[in-house]
Image (cartoon, helix red, strand yellow):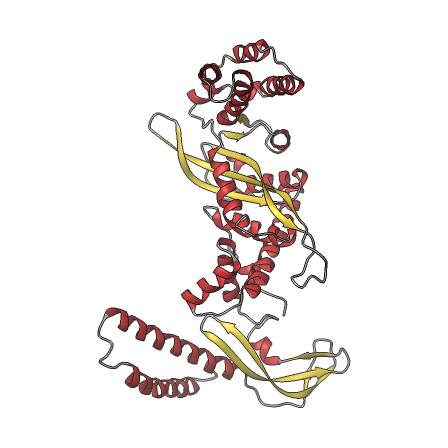
Length: 449
């Protein structure tokens, strides 16, 4: 408002307008709470939309001038008044504003857009924030219906997909900049209290991807493939009175379709942001995949390394089945005995039992070799009695559940196949939002002017 008088005139106009609406809509027919709630909501939305329209149009209105200074330094000429529609949380905002064209740089602009701080989008940053948030949680079509149900904002599934992918790509770019800053020792230390213990988990899960393709078939047939998404989690556990770690107190996720060489620095940067340098006890808990332990050795030097006990048991179960037959009592007894050996740090007994099998056939002999090497190579990660005495978790259920929750539930629904860029953007958004303390997405919802 340019003056208190102008503000009062606007208030009087709106009050007069709404008095008539209230007299029409606040009838005695609204007797139940549901009816009252619906009427109040309808009136509130109408008021919000009208106030927004009045204030924005007044801000956009200006005296007509034949020329305006162009950002290039030349003079732009008046071309007339042009409409612009923008989807907001309070409805579609329709503006009529003066537009100027610069013959020097061939750029057209509306000074009112700058006064209102409008960017190039047809939606407001707040609407984009809502759209991106929902798109990371549910399929795009469901996000569209949910957005319309909760906020009365109507966007197509395709529009929500474009918005979410743009926001996710912006967040991904910021994360890569943070990785670079971390590599150059320029990333600030987080202002976090020292933690007693922090776990780091890693795993991979496949996502259905597709090559370039269009629904009309103009780019040929649909060719699908699978790409491995690498998921990382850092979590702080609660501790029971006996000193054993129990359920998760807080967690932070990261996920990417990039190879392990890129995933490692991304996880290392997240660990830095979670204050792992000040943590008294750092534990890497995962299955036996070599790429995981390569990252652990490079990014988390000095951390305690633990192979998931149940993953180790799966290796023994496969060997027991091959040796004694599927679901036999001999196989069950042998497996139970070897698990007891593992929990009591009798790894030599496990290795002796593996070598005692006189396997017949190249396939079974290969299974025996790979199983034996698996336990030999991970011996220092299988000190389960010591780990349990210190209160450590020995199961990687947190990262396995994270893979299902973060990736499978959103990315692998029936009939889904993703462009790699779209999948990467949604994975980035979803990992951020499912973390206990998600980052603020609003800075990533702005577009260039």
